[in-house]
Length: 146
Image 1 (tube, rainbow, N blue to C red):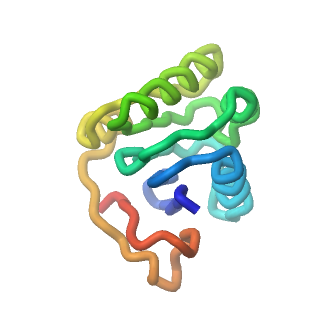
Image 2 (cartoon, rainbow, N blue to C red; image 1 turned 30 degrees about the vertical axis):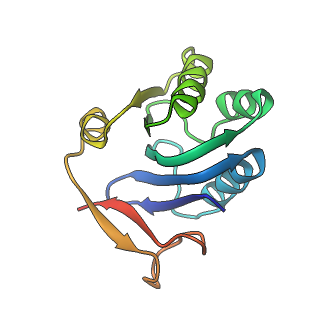
């Protein structure tokens, strides 16, 4: 699966990383994993790193479902970091769909700007082999706040 996450309850943050080709099934599995994690709370912020995303095969229906039935609730801030033109288009479309909601979603081209938006200032790499982490099995490393 090209969409992985790390939950950091101490920082009140969900950190996701998307790479390769992203599909509806990947998004559904990601949401199921996050909401099934006992540490998740709807007021958590989200940092979604899509810098390694090469293709987006997510339907309008999935974006609409995600926007209107997001596990993230009022007060949460979500930063989506993108590089490719396709990813930018999808991220901005998603942002437009959630604009009338109480959570904030912004799209960025670099990690420092996204971190400033979230009120955080630095990242470190975390290996997924750490036994305490709930990270999907195919990920090699993801980012977390220091």
